[in-house]
Length: 368
Image 1 (cartoon, rainbow, N blue to C red):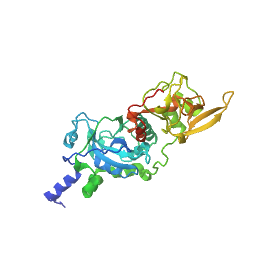
Image 2 (tube, rainbow, N blue to C red):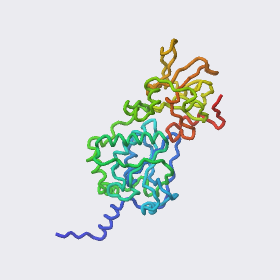
Image 3 (cartoon, one colour):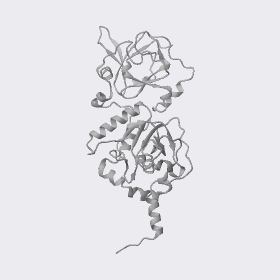
Image 4 (cartoon, rainbow, N blue to C red):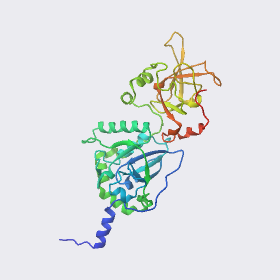
């Protein structure tokens, strides 16, 4: 028996399945100094925005476009495939509540990472999945997470999701923002028929729901991850209590304003405001930025006991503290560069350390 559909029903069905629809009102970016930014592309941004906004610690998600070569493109331009952009979302999250690693885990549970020619029913390069990193830490975490996903055996095909540097993000028209809230019926119809949820349920099974949201902000990875993440020198210093060479290390003569964090866990340790020229050939500080992140132990490697300095959460060997420093503390925290990662003032916000920006002024000097 032949079923005849009226032109009105056909028209409605086409609209519901047409994916993202163009509008003209721009949306401004979120401005909040306490939030960190992450940018992802995972196919139609209606779905990606909806999923990320359900993640604890995420405050807002903006749908838009990234990775192209045309300023402020419209949806119509991007969907034509001529601007180089992908549909993307900008995620504003509280790094005290959720880590970037957890956001990566949430992202993998939204996409088909083996498909770089589109996502589900939406085909074309402007729908391909991409992770846009905002700093070196995000890059390293994303690359490791991708390796771990490939090694998990969950996929029979290679994980081909791009990881590339973030440049620009342009908010999509207002009609696209919070589409799943404004048009729930049309959104649910589109999403079901896209095949996204069916694929994810089959691929992830009981693991689809993200179970482990970060409770502790700073953690020490497994030894296997450390060996792949750290250089040989960094591993020897932080894990085997080695000492790098004086005057031949990364930060002994670093003069830029910023903070120094544990290379393993990212926990804040020292500030350039307390760095001084000790003449020893190692980074030297008069005091820690976060004393609660410093653990003191007595070692007997030499003929006389010394006070060793280790980080609280990663238990990394950092160096030693001596009582021959300048005022006001009279202390010299002599630290291995290999134990540290420097984050300049300009990168504090995007790296998740925005709270420390207020400790610096334009007149700050480094060498005291």
